Image (cartoon, rainbow over all chains, first blue to last red; front, side, top):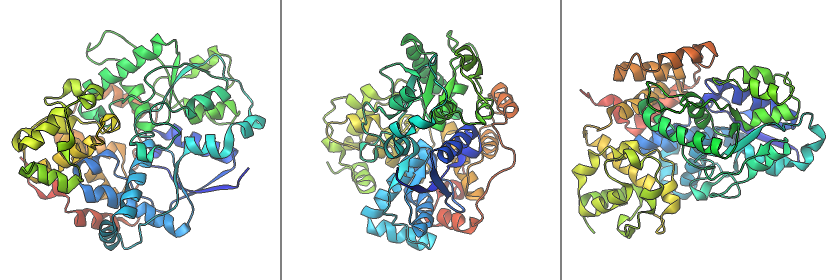
Length: 294
Length: 182
């Protein structure tokens, strides 16, 4: 197996509401011998709000991280789907538009023309580490969990920066879950939008989109949903139950990060700590499936 | 087609919206179209017709979730989400009153947080957002659950080199702070 070493861009949510994602990512990378060297003094990528309101800001904010990473010379590993999207788009624009690159360089005082690869963790685990290579580390079988794999938008769109093998029907998460012993339920909503950052300002829209996703997941026979994006996970967990009698359906389906399930399959310690942070506790489901967590 | 808004969008985003032939694939796939006042394919037409005011005052440009489903579906390869970004940026620059003021306040709160700390801290974001929108009691039950589960970290994270962050904001000519909005 290759020696894998990356400049790591954690993203802001990992030290906030997606802390369990951050913890499970780091534990998993350690177990899989993926070396993560955090980009020193990294800043927020700007997420949606930057590109939605100011073009220069949307490139310059990620550019500072690219410039710092450029000095170390390693490829960049990103865990958050939105950060991945912003970093890749910024990279592409800086490499294609020299005038923009010069303006950004003048502002940040560093060369932002990062020409290495920017990778998402799901892609690295499935394609670089390889599921076959991980067999020797598997400790727990996760049968009893029937999950729909939910990729969301930003890992696969726009097509030019798709992190995975397919924009319309990606399968990396499906394969990873199957490896862990999860019964992967096929469904048509893998890359449908959860509503993203409209969660606070238009929670009615997010409720509707999330409610639809859960109805479909339930219809397909799933007892859980697995994501690779902190924003999706947040919306799926927090906007599931209706507020103020808006919908009549109440869902209580637990939501996992793929790193958590893989971590449990590999028997990593500390998994209970990740799971306790969920709004909808997945512990009852795991216990009823007879899966040991430590 | 030569209208002013058409040329401005073309210059800003590189997109030639006259390529649109109203097949409606974008609007059919848009997850938030149900809440919009103007559909995405209609936005393309209105740009070509020069209906700048209607566009800048629409809720559509604010509701766009940037999911890029439209871009993927468009048979003419128009970056519709990019056009939405362009229209929204023009709306902000023109001081047009945003039809979705809470969404605009959300962006303002988010970016103010980055300008101060260099990183996004959820309590800061939520605090500024609630102060700007005066939606103080929304989601209180959710907020308390998040606090109990230690999902909200009360000590903010920040970048050491905040001078460079401030310079990024200054050089972008970021408008939210500079205008006096009422």
